[in-house]
Image (tube, rainbow, N blue to C red; front, side):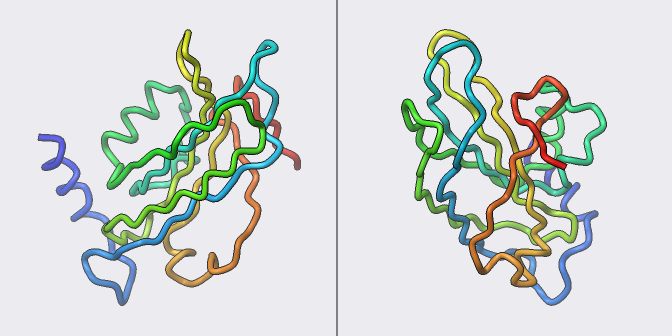
Length: 161
């Protein structure tokens, strides 16, 4: 049922001009630097969830976790997770993923960082979304630092203006 809903939604979205129905991406999650300090005096065990979604998650007006889960269910084409690295504020994953996705004109590659917690729920650290159109246009051939954004006003991430 979920797959059928996704297929219907994807058919309604315009594809990026000049591309076929599916493309293979080469996504590399290399590292994060200077993550915000964890709550309390604990160590951080970060991991990154990478997904390709049909809309920009930053456009959500209600950024609660419940709303994001519904957004992911309705918009996610693909999802994968890096390994968890223990006790670091500067994780270096060097993870590589090669998903096949439908290149819709509104699609984004979404990166969400979490701190794994063995006792309670994992803590959200920050997120960033990159337009698939920018990737296809070659704007991401070179490595670029990208600031993490908060999910909502309770996030640990501070955004510099």
